[in-house]
Length: 338
Image (tube, rainbow, N blue to C red):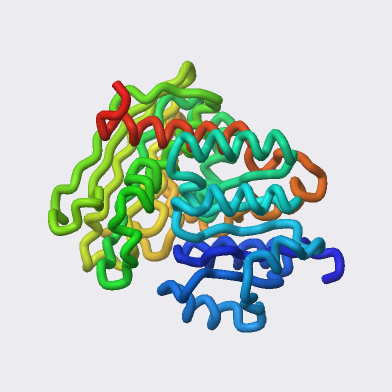
């Protein structure tokens, strides 16, 4: 594996790091080390999943290693921007868990660092990049199967799993708010499927309906947005009931001028077993497709981008715009912007 892209992780406070690391390994990368502060809840499972990857005593050991090309970040969300800047200043490209930052000021600092260092700052929007049926939907849209995309409707329900959540999960400033955090997934998909490079937030709300003992938690959020290409609606919550066999019934509907696609990403309640259910309806087809074998090209493309200094996995402008819109929606919902 002498030519493998070497990567390391800083911060494993969120379990998304499991998918980030495993998918880079499957794309041919070599996981060479990791650092985290303290022992967050995922640590035991992480060491079992990656038993041969050494934990180092300081992050600086990883940042100073010239052979490491990519740093992954899945620490407490409010800390990710600072670590991203340290990594890029050390000559590394960065893959962050979402949210990549929790304030607009942090985003400005990241933009300045990217401009200064010419490094890649990318976010693994797992609800697109780690879901094969989204890959299949993208292929169908590109082939014109539903005409011009004019709207997306994204649902991001999650299970609270209170017993496993750390204190920062209930701290608004630590996780950035529900629209900043999990809302970024659906904003990413809206921009991607409508082919938009910019958008306007037209409505945004957040609430704590069922967890009054945790005033920092926002257990419900919604937003609407529009661009010159289409409109979108997004709903997020922490209300997934215990009987559902997975963490959330995440869905995306993509409306086109000649048909629509519905993605039942993680479960098909009352329907087929498994994941990655795609429903296509247009002028000649009305069918359900098992899209579980459609692949997840983001990780291979990112590897190529790091080597070739290209933007095939996700453009830098797109990553910035998703964060800007999510943070703007959060501020509107909290009354900080009109």
